[in-house]
Length: 110
Length: 110
DNA sequence: TAATGCACTTACTTACAGGTAAGGGGATGA
DNA sequence: TCATCCCCTTACCTGTAAGTAAGTGCATTA
Figure (cartoon, protein in one colour):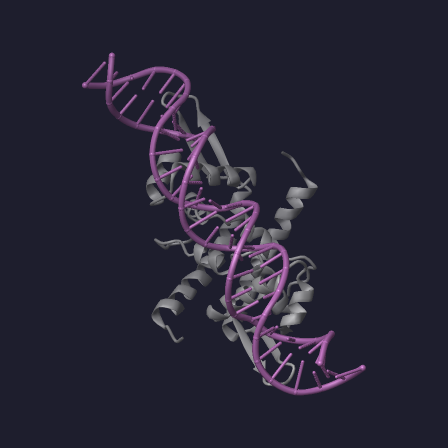
């Protein structure tokens, strides 16, 4: 049972809202990635949006940004320790999402 | 572990995106509600937005709409059987959300 | 006759997320 | 000297979500 007055579903939805954040999280759960890696892995994302959403996730404490002062610069993005707490949540969300997609595309009962 | 190619987190986020959907879900998890009930329970929602988001949730099969042909009209909204599958997901999301809010407002370490 | 309640819909406007294109800084390679 | 690589930032524009306000239809109430 849920026994809160306010609605914290909103919190998580808000943290992961934005067209590209779920994808970013998805790939960072798998492993640490560089900016360019993410750009290649996420089709059609612009550099601006990727940078912006990474900064959002960093501000929330979910993503760690590690800069190596080399030339050319190397920046790595990874899930922070706190960000790892999202993994089980993401799993539950994924199970539901997969099922929902199946329902939508395999049994269009409507 | 998550072993999908595509990212189904997006699916759930998309289903619950829109400023008012989490709140609507929240109240319908508690119990069946009428249009006016929801309007009163959700501060600042306009009738237009409430109607629109309820229709969205109905289209996804999450919410059932029951019309009683009385005058004045009576319409009840409730979680469908399928919508109930969202309850455990919502619970996990809530736990994380509560914790995140605590972290943000009680320990502004940044 | 007019007002009220319910559950919306419609038309119009505003705000913000996102898209496009270009630049920047600093070292290396041709 | 020019181009290239990496990781962005900036300026500008567009499209969609959301806000505002009014209207609809029907029956009951005053």
